[in-house]
Image (cartoon, rainbow, N blue to C red; front, side, top):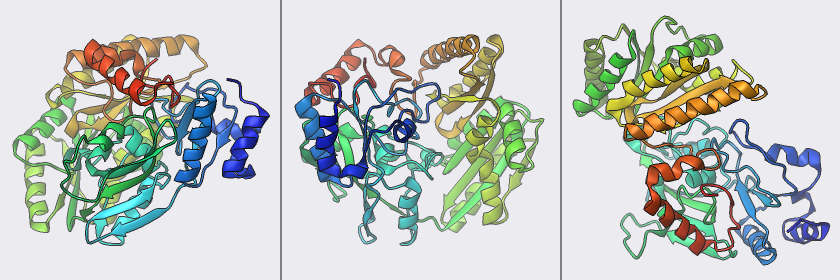
Length: 460
């Protein structure tokens, strides 16, 4: 159904005149997310202030059979918040209140539009912390993190967003408000409905409020940066650390291309002639941290680390960690278009996969920097390209197809933390198989029979 001025007037009654955007110059920023080369023209953007306004907007959309695409800060990397034809874009960034921090019960309740870093900052004031730390945490919203089940650098030890969600408030496709989960540590009453919505990418319901588990802040941390002449040695170091029953909070790597870009960008003093850098961090009780750090250093050197730098204080630790945290920003400066990919393989296949990505890049004459979470097998091959060059983009797509094929051949997954959205849906059935893919479609149809929430994402 085409949107008309009468539709806009009804929406203005719900959220106020200034919170319904229809002017072209106001709407353009909402027509794309962080995914390169994916965008679609939008007709209207709505900025609700609370759950009741979201519910009223969804009820209006359901009555008129108008699709709804929800977004937060638009940092997604799979096209999940790109508008669809004739939709209402529902932007939830005004819903940015931290409702409460319950230090006694180690929980935090927040509206969906709270910036992820602000969740951790609020926890820190009580001597607590929120472990998931996606690369976009300074600008991404907690609701978007839950919708995408975001990961981060601390995922090896602490897990991903799903592991910290205790409860949700969700607006359903018909506008009803459902409250799922609670503050109890143990609760097995019925189906675990909240888990159905975590990672559902806005296709089943709209997350408006979250109840999160917090942890006591670690008393100590040690940060180390090891350089290697061979990627295989860095991968073997990771395997040996895990085999030694050490679970660091961070085990991250950068390949040679990424190292050069980071050094150009951040001037950290990284060795440009090595093939791999491994960022290692351990945290916890001071004596345990000292013991684990010493063992990790020993393991790194035993596996041919050329050099290992150990941070002597917090400032130096932050500088070493910035080598990994600035990887995407550094790579994005090189060419007009940056395509940040996301695949995961079993840890023992990491060196094989990194080598394969390098071969594919050479085969298709492409510039690719690879970095990622070596501790959990999550790789981010990053294509530095120009979307205006049709031939080069064709070669990028050919390379991606080969990378996905190899990922699945090695028993991996097509996405470790970025989601499916528009970018990965063509490969989802290949990974899941007919039965599992069909089950997901049936769940979507059961909850959203008119396909009004984020249509075209995850499935055609």
